[in-house]
Image: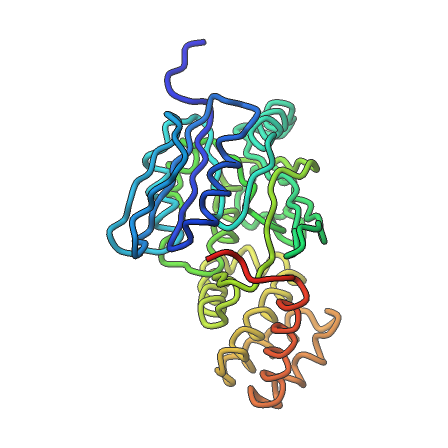
Amino acid sequence: MNRSGPLATIVIPTHDRPRLLERAVASALAQTVEDIQVVVVDDGSAEPVELGLQDPRLLVIRNHRALGASAARNAGLRAAAGRWVTFTDDDDELLPDMVQASLAAAEGSSLPQPVSVLSAVEVVDGRGQVVETRQPTTVARQAPPYAQAPDDGFVQDANTLFAPAEVLRAMGGWDETIKGWEMDDLLIRLVQRSSIQGAPQPTYRRFRHQGARKSGNAAVASEGGRLVLSKHREFYRAHPHLYGHQLAIVGTNYLRAGRWWPAVRAMTTSLRVDPARPKAVVQWVGTLTGPRLYGSYLEARQRRSRQEASASPPPA
């Protein structure tokens, strides 16, 4: 085979979570396909990452200050020597055949080339029980406004993205200005250059816990959502059901962040775009009551959900 370098690179950005990181790295190195590279990007951790794992396939690079998850992923993409690349969060883990199953799905796809892959995600609670399996989307490569795209969007969970490295580099990698919805942005841009083959086999475990997740930050999520909806206005206008649903998510996050007027505006637009959406009217009326009433209810519901999802806090 006339190929230099590993077959695939697994990029793991991390910030101040050394014990969780070791689990993620161990799962990456335990792949059934051994011809891989694992790139850990230390995004300005207070203490530089030092792994007890010794493996010639492992590379650790460091940003001397925290630049954010997208910048860390881009640093890993630049360092990736593999033909294929995937990105794993430091508090999750890969199942052993993630690379093998993704390669098989890409090679067996009848979609227009090049082909990237999304596979299923297992969501695991604090007791180690699988409580949900998220299935991926299949979409052929296409130009805006993505008329053939499914109306629920391209992604249930983009953590399993397995893509040709040269395709991701050609499109500029992750948008570092977007924090919170960067995976939505990446896939909407990616499908212009690559088909996305969905594979039903679970290859990734996402852990629910009471520790910090960026998705739990209402201010970050609302601002990220606003940027993505504005950047990809043509796509969302072609899919009003998805547009209404995403606007409602942005409105909910604005409300949780105590920003009443942006929440009302987002919920009102959501109702106008897709008035038949379930709960659309209820959410709009609730938003009108303001952060003190409806916002407090949403915060209490989220706290209860986190407590129920986790039996104990994650390791430090």
